[in-house]
Length: 444
Image (tube, rainbow, N blue to C red; front, side, top):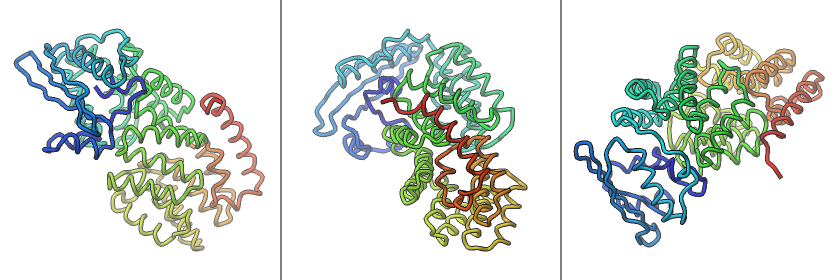
């Protein structure tokens, strides 16, 4: 239902991850609407009698409680897609006066009820983004496609789950291979499946695929043409944008995703990093802090908050943030590179070198290695060691971070600004950034 109503881009609909906390609470729907900062609240009930369903739906104006729609639907459980589309069309007509564009698409095939329930449960597990729930989601989705091999949405969701496992918990070829198979199957079954296109973009933008920025952006843009209200597509497009130097476009895209889901801790981490690259360090600290308020274990905010504090010169606070993050992520090399930057700022070359040696020797981090190399290059630059700094910057640019403005404006790299190899690298990155701007940047 959320996907159906969001597809045209004319309605912002709060996602499942935002509203699910009300499920087991005895909450006045209008009070929930005010808490969610929405104009309309839709609630209802579902009754199941053997293979039949009865769904009661009511839409109300949150300002005065007046009814916009009240309807009852009876259906066979095997026609869940048809039931959803029928209710979605009625709601869209009540709210917009017309059906959303997706309603004109070809009808989806009937889906096995057991497979569909497994799909819904698996998708809900993925919102928690930890290893155990992702693994459980994969098992549920594998069972869903085993029961119904033509279920495109389940194949797409399985692909996304495999990419999540590969990126965050079990790097290596296994999950990339399994995810690729699932995504290809989803696209073959339904070439208009926006979820499959987002998953394909995420797959292309992994270390295993050597961060194919252009192809990944094209896949995500394809998803947004199919569903302009796709919140994951908006956030991932913004995340890739800031890595290739399109900072204004990155911020605009991620903030559009946050407007749909104001409680997405991952999106706060992405917009915080964008603000960092823009030199808006106070804003970055605020965004990272808000992400951590939503999820105290939010990976990106945990790892990037110390960097923003270092840019601000708040060394003691940065050290405290590093120590706090290390309790969650002991031995993470991105944090070691942050700590090296801290001691480089304090002028302790011996301790800086020790930490850099430890970080670079291991290279293992739960985020992408290019960020660790970027931090380490800054530490070497501050110690007036341009050769190792340049070697790391070239590696970072070649494997995921060809961000011209991030390198050009980084205060830690200021000692390199008259260094000929650094200027040549900047010139190369500026040309590359211009190609992304021409294809993906704002159109006047």
